[in-house]
Length: 329
Image (cartoon, rainbow, N blue to C red; front, top):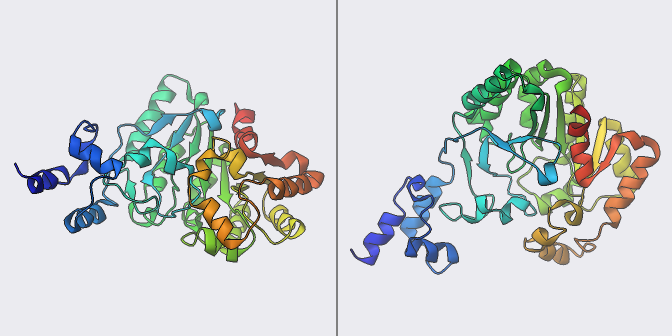
């Protein structure tokens, strides 16, 4: 078999057939960067960037940064919002993704996850341990990225949870698409908190750092609509990006949300900033002549201002994110 035949075999879709076969010499070289993708390989990679990948399980036991939650729930693998600071870039789910693509260039719908979740929740109810269900949705993807319009996987997951309610659900997103599912969230009542990521009050900063993400004003509008529906709403300033002024940003936050969590790269990436240091963020901050990316002064100033008048409703980093789950336990 010639080298061209071997290349075709290695990159023959579906890529699922290649999982766990890192002992293959050519695949090792490809992942290590020694293999250069041909035009044919690039075409296959493009076609495979959004291919469905059915899950073997819906709920994943969690801990670490999410201590207090018992499970995470990821309707998708990858995320098209392409946030350059996302810690998932350093995890094996991305580093060994096949085909090898930059972070933000792929997102795979985990088709069937809603039905699978329903079965897993039903088993908890049958064993009468549903009070152990404290779910974070989602920690390594955005459940309401653009693909959700077509696949509706997050909606099917919520439908399963309406039938078998968990003890607690934190729904984390930055997308106004979540408004479509307010009808289901209302049915979960106080079992659910909607957490909307709003890292800054400056849309200029947003366009520089996360140009694929919804505008700041549009996200604040989603928060307003959620409150009008009677939902519990948290704003996650995570990570805290450069903002206009402490008072202006803080006033806007407290006007819109019942609860606020502030986080920074150094406190929140799980490795005291080491993961972020390996991303594009340090160079981006240098290019924009912003304060050091790993400085926490701006985040702390915002946090301290908010604590003066809303102490019981403001959290910092990990403890802030997990406080609601721990209090619900």
